[in-house]
Image (cartoon, rainbow, N blue to C red; front, side):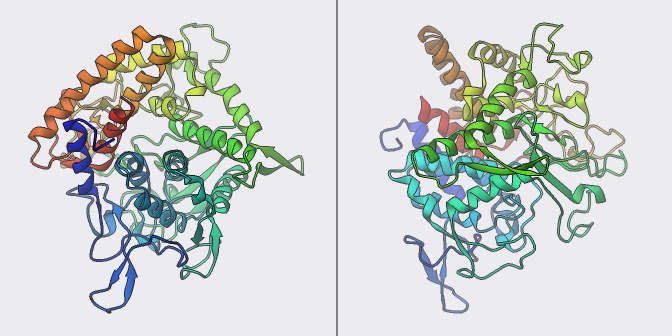
Length: 504
């Protein structure tokens, strides 16, 4: 793909190298000793051999080294574009297995902290990790062999101290099953070392983390009003504006992209089990005091049956499935979440449903999906990225300034980080969703969409040519204006644009 690709593809592939590297100190936990293809070096202090796997930086210059280099969510949103599409399969495998070592509470860490200082405060990273395993198995010849690779558990139980590699080894397929089983059982815990020394802005209640499954719908649920467990994770910091400790976007309940990612994984596991490539056919739960097996096929079907009626905002004002018709202010869109503690937030137009469209397109009626994408294009599309909130929304503000601190609740100390500024990485999913559904609807529409996509990407090519960092930024302000508080070059921005080019 890269060797035979355009100049744009080659330049982005070069940009990807900024994010892939090995520092003075290992960023990833040690892999099981019996795995082949794990690079080593001599430690310059001790003179002893140590593993030195490539890790992914989230962005430059802010997230490049030390504690803030590796983030679970950023790594696995970026891994397909930066490593699988570019052919770095061994490095991708090692990163997948290294993070597998850190599983705890059925979750992957957000901030990795080399595994021993990890924070398990995000609900989505584990689903991005699972999506990457699926992508790896699809992209790599005999990729399903990864499912039998041994994983050295740092935390074989939630309360384990970090263990040395080789103490408890399990095949990757057991780790995957643990994620699914723990979510079905439901998990509630309080972050270790909770308090202002860990997070000086969060309220005490925010350190309480919960995830589970809504048995009525099959949707993964979690979170609460005092924490923010998805990529839109801005915590209020301003005492003057009195937003300190209040998440700008808690997105609790069932966030649409997590529903899509989990559906993708459940469908995939059902298919693997049919082919005798995954040893488990479902998860166990208790109903009326009796243990019941819910197969992956049953779980998959339940999500399919419930998705459109819970997420699509119909043009029919008398839609019998609409729980809060008085909150509807945009029709023919998909909700950003379902079951939020503040129901208004469910109905906000944001770019996240396009992610679900790419990873689980089978959930969507093609005609409804196309209408929703047209509204997203009309309302959210900027020169380089997608607005993170509908500009018609009362709290929209497209200019991010993290130093600004006055009495304005909605913007002080960058409170509007995900309330308008135009982020690049969701654009990749929007464009891929457009390509997929236009192709389903008809060849003429698909050709028209390809032209549109290439036209949009011409802005990124132009930006890359002129960038002194030779990369794509984290975000821009309104209408593509430069944002000095953004990373100058960001892993997931480069990755998701590479993925679009790969599909073209």
